[in-house]
Image 1 (cartoon, rainbow, N blue to C red):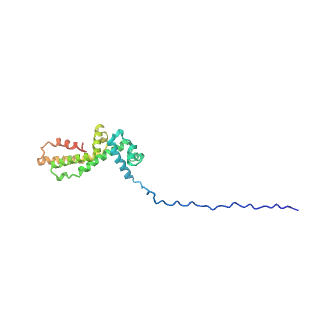
Image 2 (cartoon, rainbow, N blue to C red; image 1 turned 90 degrees about the vertical axis):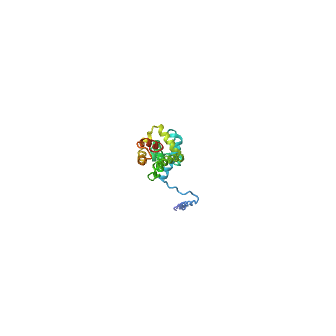
Image 3 (cartoon, rainbow, N blue to C red; image 1 turned 180 degrees about the vertical axis):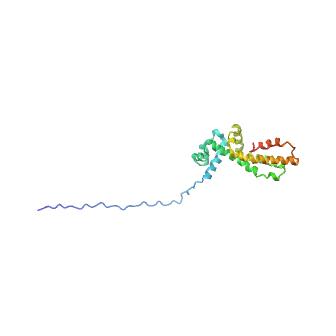
Length: 198
């Protein structure tokens, strides 16, 4: 009699269905995604640098502090301006550019020469009050013997038209007889002293 070995069929393990994780419900209270705006970031860094350099000077100001005040990362300051000196030069140029905008707004050609000179000098003093950082930059550049000003092509480009305007006003004053002839060379440094044309 042969014996049969009963083989039981082993049940294969029951596979559990694959459950996909439920998609996370969208949060309605989440902050909107902030898009990067390179120009705005660069401007915030520059604005913070104007204040920081004016308050502390080039040597004591720190890129980390400027970036922090701008709500940016210090690498972005280096990306946009190259170095601390590059950022300082950009801030210096910006402070001068603000004054040039004020001076260009004065229609000196339509004014009597004396009134034009008074308007230009008054505008400069008003600018000094409105933008005290400008005065700080002028003081720093005096200490540095205009080291940074001399490297700026932008400031040189801004100065040339202003000097030309001042000369024309003074020439007109001489032609009309309200300024003595030969006094232009004495007046020019006086008018220049208070602004960009230094």
